[in-house]
Image (cartoon, rainbow, N blue to C red; front, side):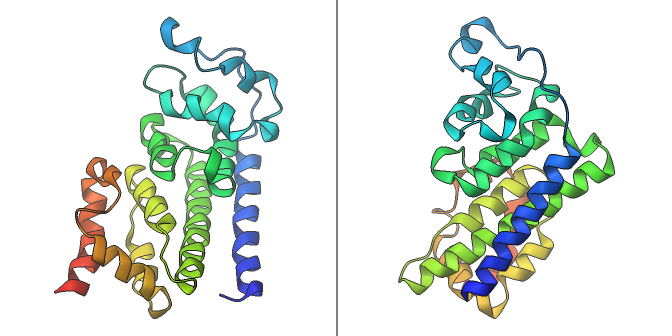
Length: 213
């Protein structure tokens, strides 16, 4: 991918992220609740006293891991969601992986949210997938293939998103190195989180099996 094309992909993610921030622009909740033995270890006060765009990935990590399981609810998740997505896409070294971050959407019941809210999340994930795929293809030019696109794809599947248009993108000639690597790793070496998205894995397998038959 050329520098100009890479810049365009990154700009698209940033624009989609701006829309997410605008759509989920709500006041910080007064408290994040949770089980007493868990809430004290997750530094939730920092999440409510730090400006949203300044919250670090490390500060978010414990919250994202436990939200809807031992701490948090839909209200605080919706408030933090824009920053969760931003850190996941742009600071992956300090973020929960996409499979976990996007998988929390299902626990939040996001398919009951307003259609516009669902749409902006889908648009962000679509742009994020393109960025991840571009990164994997850049790695392929260096002699190895990354797995970022698969992680976003699996996360989207865990969120209950249809994968069809991304599978078409993976099947395009330009994405051949990434698809070939996924076919090589199928089924035993793919992300373990596919176990929690069997319908998505079934969709994905249609292009992986086809390529290895």
